[in-house]
Image 1: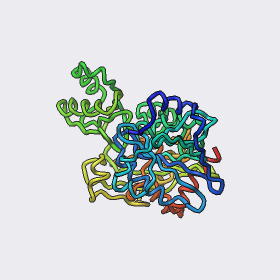
Image 2: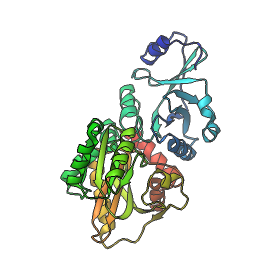
Image 3: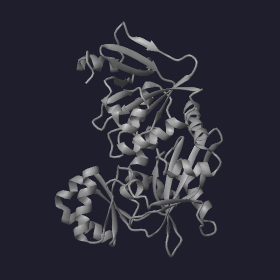
Length: 378
């Protein structure tokens, strides 16, 4: 814990009542990029990998970096040593960080043994996946603070994170989606009634997903009543809103969307070849047999259909900066079926978003710069 500060002193600092001896640091030669990573979601570890890729691509001749790690418990810590991210030792930092919502401060307060330092921020790059990072919560704080930030805003982050809400926004676009049944956690007190309602609307097998979760956390496939009951319990442990969908059997395809000075544009298409039955968290990050293919051979017209749909969905949720939009190409029918949109996709070495733009001639360094510039432009 940070020494020298009571809870009340921290609260006052966070809301713009700093002591008179506060030190203010602002780099006049370079713009300061605050990079947030970690977080309280189930995708904490993925974020800690993504951030290493992002910071490696930031031009140090143009930008000064301020790294803030958020532990699973929700502690915000100043990270001085980049190498500590790989080892995990950043979590032992004794310097607390407070991103104040006070718009007149415009930066991060660092609390170290009774010393207060205000580090001014020009832009924030939130490399956070899932709840409390990709869902509009961090974005809301940044809006209050008046600090530009990379990626989608409060509204688009919140509605895209929630799978049920996304489906309802995409419905009017005429883009095919899997049929679904919504379930609330409190309804599971009578799980037999819930199962009966699902069986009335859908046929087995079905997929059960938390409405708010990423990297396929809490997602299960159920082939019968017993498996459905277990899957509902797993999903309910992740979120209070649950989505039960019909199973779409087909190729798993992804498309990256970028908004920069040239407007909104979609990349080419990437295909996921999952080692498991479906592309769950373990298949993504723990199974070396899972593969991604860039520019896979698709039936005539399907690449452009997916690209148009990805752009339309991005605009429908009021997307900003970047998103990855996922689809199925259904076996037998070749229907393009929308699956989900991710407003802060992964930036790991196996992540599709940066690879798709690299394949289109935008290397990682240029992509990160475009995202930072899009934050300033907004």
